[in-house]
Every structure is written in structure tokens, then in C-alpha cells.
Image 1: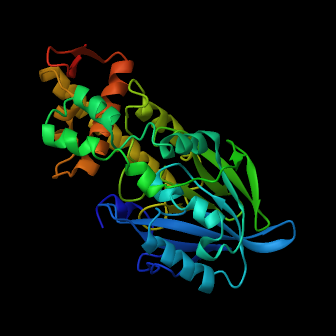
Image 2: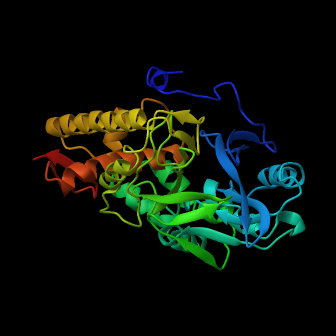
Length: 357
């Protein structure tokens, strides 16, 4: 546990539910944990005891990626954890593959087609998922991503070829989506299991991220907006090349830092914790430090996003990690550029570089 983590409280510090099993973390809330084939090797998913139109059952929050291993774990959950009751709806926090990848399959009742239920999501997340699952606009690979990151200093031919060859990245992990959904909006109240859960939207990490707060029990399902160990990835991708996602993210954090400090935060990665205001302060301090480093570097010499990556990430990165590292470096550059603290110019090599004003 690092120094910052010691400032947080972990009520289930020694507990990790095995894939296919569940652990009770709050009244009517079960914690599932599924593997991921990335450096970030797991995702937390949630089961909420529910009742809709007089039918008892469960609401699923987030789904995992689409692969046979995760499906097998879910089948075990369906058979052994749900107490003989059906899933009544599937709610996703956002459009990234580890959250929405199996939404179509769970909505349809898994391999045995046990039920047919609605997907709930915000408009921004659902439509973004539809765009990317169509094969158009994936942030993680393809010719567009190679062109975008090439303009920002990724000039190594091997890395660019790897990016181009990842053109099917999103559709491989999210092979289908439900054709219909129910829309969630900021401050909506969703009745789940007789309790009110308030929708808390957030921006910067994804188009219209949906967290859920139960003020009665002081429980927050935070998705990827507030994580205990790592900072949320905030990236400029090809689909919005002049975007300011870090500005949006830091603004969104204001919706969380007013929550009670004893709120039990259920994050998508890492362990449940208390200390939400403390964690928000840590995240703000983290980004302030990174922004100061970027300004200092751009004062000394023109910097591309690729030049900034080694300042922010001190380890070796594979191509999957490099796309997010470049996107995050560019997000910090863009916040400063759009605030007038940096200016940018395109060199004769076609690479965009930033200097201090």
C-alpha cells in the first residue's frame, strides 16, 4: 500500500471475490471481480438486489469484456449467486469495453437466454459505443489513431504499424450492442431495491460517464471516475483531436468532493474504500504536479506529446499502454494550451509541438 492509500480506509482490505463468486459489501449490493487481459488485470462489477413491476431480481452494473472466460464466470454467477432470481436490467457506467462488452449477452440472459431485459445508459455512452462498435472511430487503433498519434510525435514505424493493426480492437471486445436502451441523465433518480440511487454524470474519461449514489446508505458506485490506487485515464483521442478532457474531468470531480467522507466508494478497479474527499484532493494534487512538469518542460524546449510521455510514465509501455499514455500527455498539454499558457506549432516533420507563452 503506497503513502496515499494510507490516507484512505479499506473496509474489505483482505477480501477479493473469486471470479464467478460474490461478496456482500453493502445492503443489497454484491461485489463481483472479473479478470482482464491487460496490465490493469481486473474489473469490479456489481449486483444490486432489485424489484421491477413486482418481479424480484437483480440489477447488473457493468459487464466485463466479451470473451469465453468472462462468459463462463457469469454463467456461474447466474446459476449460483442470483438465488434463483432473474436479472431485471443491465446498467453500464460507460462505453469502454471492460464495462459494456458483454451488455448485449447479459441482457439476453447469457448462453441459456434466461431473460430479455433492457440496457440502461446515458445517451453519450450508448451512442459512442454504437459508433465504435460499428468499426468507425475506435480510439485504440486503426489508421485514424495512427495518424492522430503520429501528428503528436509517435513516429516509430513499428509502433504505427501496431496501431494500424489494432483497427478491430473495440469490435473484438464489444461484438454487439442491444438495439434499444433506456436513457439516464444527470440527477435522475433510479429506484433499485426500494432505495433511490442518484445518477452522477462525469466527463473527460468518457463522453457521459454515469456513477450512482445512494444517499440513504452512503454508497457510491463510482465506475472509473474515482479510483483508489491509480488516476483515471483522461485522453485526447482522434475522434476529438482538439478536446480538453482533463478540464472536463477536473470540473466533474466537484460533484464528488461534496459527498460525505464516510461514503463507501465502489470503484471499477481496486478495492472499495472510504475517504472520497481525501481521494479527490489527491487527484487534484496529482494533476497539478503533472501540469507543472509539463509547463517546465515546454519552457525549456518545444515538446510533443510523445516527448512528455517519459515525464509522466516512468516505465516501459506496450502499444496498448502507449495509446493511453500519449492521450493523457496530450490532455495535459491541451488544458494548458486552451488556457493560453502554451502555444503550439506544426514542424516541417508534421509533428505538433508546444512551447510556453
